[in-house]
Length: 400
Ligand code: PLP
Image (tube, rainbow, N blue to C red; front, side, top):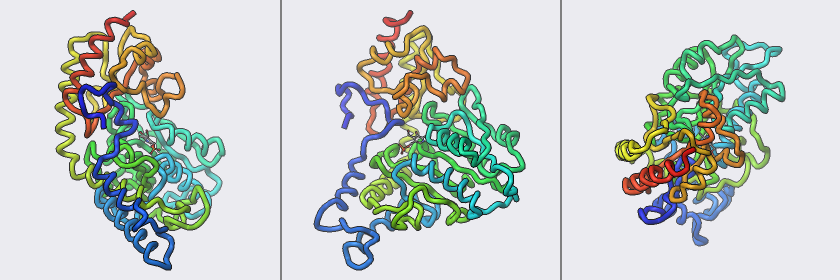
């Protein structure tokens, strides 16, 4: 693991993915041996299957406890992208087929209306754009504030009589800023509007209590919280269980919503990671705030940069820094000692400036010369100080 300050490049891309915690790896290894626990949890006729099923259900309970939610609402997926697609498409299709409750009395002739924001992850934006293109929904995409935030007032103003669903991020993956989810959730509940929250970047960085949010659907990912890649969770509130149409059809696992043999070791890994994240959240958040302050202090020797989202409530471990008068590609190529991402790593297959930054009104040039630095459990103050010094040394050399 990249913890030594001399190991280069210094890993500062935790919002893209975090290394597996050794405790998570150990918990997973127990299930990966050939002598026990390798059974198929759907095999109900022998001990191997029962053991695997017990481990899976134990993981479900452990994970539910970490997010302060009912274990019956926890559905294991292959990652947050699948959770988000299942939440959005599953609910809209379920609504169309009369499976989902219709407490607002939207007529069969009207297109159900969905509200989201232009600062969402592509998994949300593309799933909803697909539903709109298929004429399954009408869609309002709210413009975030300059800081990247959506306010309750914006949601209230956008609501139509046929609005059935609001889908918003809790913590923005590019900026680290936080939407006021608890307030929006409370309001949506009172209006009988379903709320889906993308909480992928929240776990371990800020308190996560589904009991407090009032959200009906919440998406999580294992690998952003020191768990394995390829596993996620969709939390489904009681009222919507049985209301979603599955994306795939098959063996009926996860109560028919996610058919296919369950990867028990992945579920156990994610549950262990979430338990650790919840237990260590407060202590880690305090440490990250100190590191963030010290890092920004280190950058104070440099002029011509901005911290995007500044002033908004945020998690401490994600920083989005825009550098003026610098070519974005040259910046990335020159900063050889740090592993960071330009905008979002999930978008970095395209060279377009980040859709999140441009949605916040940041000009294309500054958006293109923006770096996202994100640190975590296996980072150190020394690494952050070294990163700041490296940036201060490199940027003046490549300034136009
Ligand atoms: N939502 C957010 C906010 C993310 O940051 C990511 C990953 O970058 C995803 C969703 C997709 O997560 P996964 O990699 O588990 O599919």
